[in-house]
Length: 188
Image (cartoon, rainbow, N blue to C red; front, side):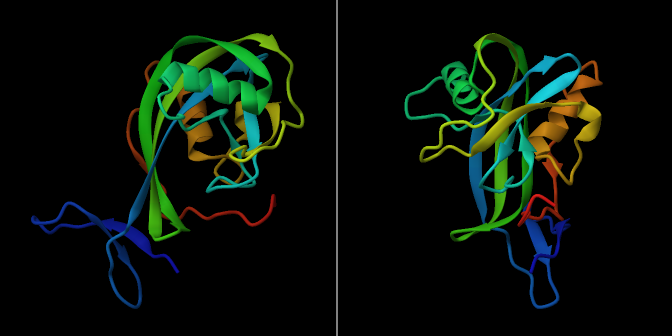
């Protein structure tokens, strides 16, 4: 299915290649861009449980893609409200990073996910244990989880980056490549 991503040493190529037992082929990336909120309360991180996409059956940060003509901060507020039920105040931009991982979708073999993170605080509303479902809604529920309970088996790269940032004095800006990323078929 997928092999290991390896950086090419060829001076003419700056692309990654997939090593497979059959043949080498260049990955075809789908680029995703989104905004995501980091919200802590009582030493717990607010996360959502995903119902579709590459992070299905994992915890993810509230957030997502911009709608046409929408600003970054307006998208952050809308997505957070839709997925968690909370109205927020944006405290600061935490950082920006990107992730790459294998994921078959349409004609693509990989995802290149670019993410802008914000530190946010709750300004009102109530936690949605069962968000309204509509086309584009990918949250099954919002919940508070202790950072030490989040790991590669139950959380998205976005959550892992947020947890990492909580223990550092500066934003961990390095790109992350998950060459062994697997879509989960169930919550186990």
